[in-house]
Every structure is written in structure tokens, then in C-alpha cells.
Amino acid sequence: MDGYERILVPTDGSEPSERATDHAVDLAGRYGATVDALFVVDETYPAVSHWDMVVEAEEEAGERALDAVAAAGEAAGVAVERHLRRGVPHEEIVDAAAEYGADLVVMGTHGRTGLDRFANTGSTTERVVRLTPVPTLVVGGAGLDEAE
Image (cartoon, rainbow, N blue to C red):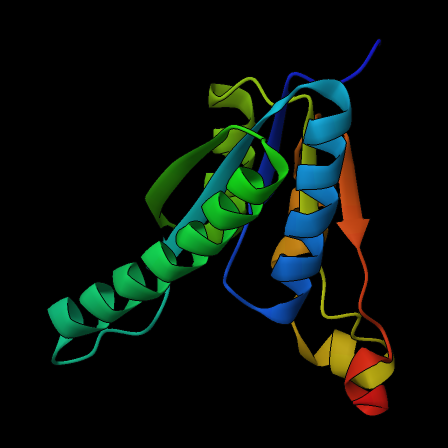
């Protein structure tokens, strides 16, 4: 492989997602690639009485997260395509990587370890790494919360 043409960066607007965005934009700039910014409205939440309001709030958060990726791309002279999807996050990310022809997925992780990691049933990032055939760069954040 001589480089990358399309780099998928899933974002949730968090600090780890911002670090992943920085890496994705940097790589895209080096290789002349396009960044596909993806926000997934998680539809796995338990049913609530005001579901439409929850989805609307999530979509607004998604737009803000996608705006941040687009701004990072614009500042670096990198093309960014925005995508907002609904569903199970790891499934949508794996599907998006295939549909958009991604050469690389760049994702942030909260860096959970030990019991905290096992209390989770597996992070979205871990699931994507296991399920996608697309190479995945995981941008860690272990220990950053303690340093702040």
C-alpha cells in the first residue's frame, strides 16, 4: 500500500475522539486522503418516554462533533465528508468503513484498564477492531484523566 485515500474517524465529541481526529487529519494531510467523519446516534438506549427528544439531542451533539472534525480538516486543508447514522455504534462503524471504502479507521479510546474495562462489556473501539477487516489505528488515552 502506498498510502491512504479514505480515512474513517468515528467521533462522539469526547477528548479521545478529538485526539483521534488530530491523527486522522494529520495522516490525511500527509497522504492527500479524504476524512470520513462519522457520528452514530446510539439506538441501543432503553426506551424512554421522550425518545424523539433524546434522538434530537443526540443528533445535535453529533452535528457539533462533526463540525469539530470539519473545522480540523479545514484548518489543515484536508477534505472532510460528514456522516450521521443511527444504530448500534460498532455495527454502524464497521458498515461505514466498508461502504465508504475506508483504507484506515482511526478511533479514540478512553484507555480503561483492569476492573473498569471488564465492567464494560467491551468498548465500541474493541468491537470495531475485532470485527472490521480495515486496519484500525487506536489512539489511546490511558492515564490522561489522572494527569489533568
